[in-house]
Length: 350
Image (cartoon, rainbow, N blue to C red):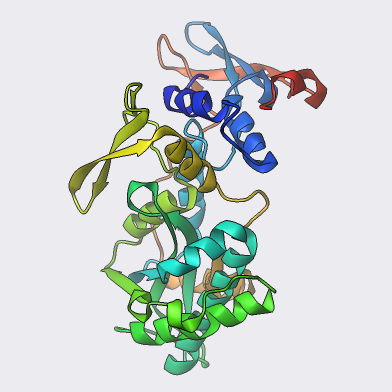
């Protein structure tokens, strides 16, 4: 399945002057082969008009502009079955820009250190208020204009379990308390992982340690839907128009922030470099659950879900294909196996 945006990215990335590491090459190749024979598929037939069609599987590569929507919806539905129908805080934890270089050089270790700080901050909240809330944290790396901006999205339940097993609402929390924990432990965690070139205190702008909060009252589906964009979204939307200016050697596209649309124009190589760097490192966990939303509390969470039930309508399973002629359901009549690795090696990015 060809995607124009992806092909424009590839046209720049495949130039000899442009450097990609082995993991980025593999990611790019996976995306180029999304919905092709490499990943197998199925032959389906319409139960009404008899039309036969071939459907190929997704690559499920992080950052893929072709299949991210399906993964996003699947993740959202899964999370909605494991959260409580209570009010939630949406916290965006921002750190000083000086740490960006540390992240670029040590992506996996930096992310793990940041998560450890967030875990400490949530534990601090629990201890201070005497309850165990539920938290889902998502690590994200891009800001406006695809800029590098490592930060954390957190969904925190407004309330939690007391030591007696009762539910107690929070009402409000101290965002300063969260900021102070992140500020105190981030450098310590980076040092513990033996990361080099950690910024010195004199170079860290203390005003850039921030927690931006939004309160969602009785609308957990809305906040989880928003979080799905951060957890499983892509930097460039499949439906955005990416305009190539051959004369200037740039790509331009529109971004929407706070209801306002802004036109972004970037040098082609800078655009591709940022796009590839925002794809998470393979085998890293960019979403983590704490407190009531962790596996440790699964039994107690199940009991609370009966007290705070969430009635949601799941969309039809994605494995059901629909006829392109009459839109009726199609049934699988043959399964296509994935291509063996050696059969497609000649197409790999070099």
